[in-house]
Length: 436
Image (cartoon, rainbow, N blue to C red; front, side, top):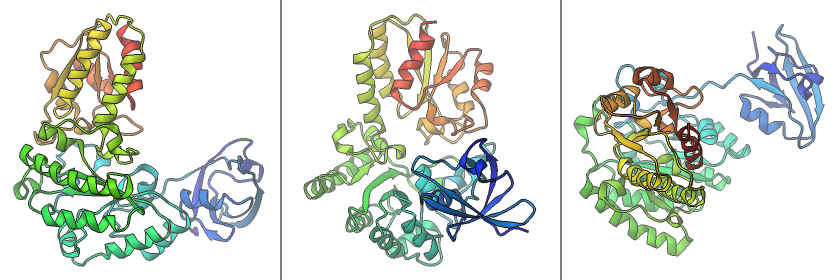
């Protein structure tokens, strides 16, 4: 029988925790009288100089332990991970519901946890958040948060999220903003549903809370070949993308004049679909929504040019291959043509058709191992293959269909590498493996 708290998995030898007698299996129940529900709460309450821990030993006995700490004192413990809060919505366009059999199991978890939003930039809806959660977010300064809005009209948002009742979104947003929490919003745009006047209302409703709401990412709906959404929604076309860009440019000009920021940003996919060059880096301000595909292409292009300019003009002798998604293929091919010219090498680029999820899915981050293998069948690949880092899961490096880099290497018969998180990583890798 435990009183909850967080369980200690490991105690570092010689650490502050070790010195006061904390052991693996102990539970920290309270810190200075505050209940500890997860590691984030522990970090917050451990910031004080004088710390009183209420600990429950593995045998059930409770005792108080005291520690005096300075700014650089680390407690030296590893604790259990918190249980993820899952989504209680039934979104019309939920991508998890569009996943095929055989996808890696972690992708089937519908998380809607404000802690993951704070830690990793995951988008949450705020629908399952309680008044106590809101108070905790403000008290512990869990900022910024990334929030999926989709529509501010209560009835439309209720329909989009598949809820029976409206969720008091504006009330929650106002409370968070007044409490000093900064928010980055997301709108998944669905042609004919939450665009037009509905999109305009959403954007301007959110702007009323600026600078609490710091940015809006407007991204196109993703439609796989699985699940019901493909039968109900229209895909984003080139003509639609051009129209959205024209509309957004007028808003962005207005926001720039008022705040010095574009505020509402379009996903790179709109520009690529429309055949329009992505904006310059200054348009994206602090690139706060880059992980949502906002400014990712511009960042790559600028960093690629920077690396190309400062690298020595040494030759790369080994031929190799890069593979990417269809939407980024023209950009990467153009860049690698410059790379080959600069370093006298032969690095080829291929686009992978997404068969695993469907041809409407064109981004590199959703390529499966089977897609990569099928796209490269019969091709001359040279001495190595580099795949996008984005298509691998964090931590364990597994592709969408549970294949690993080692599986790809075995099936293709050549070494396979991940491109790295930055353009510098990408260049370093090419110079390392391209020279033999």
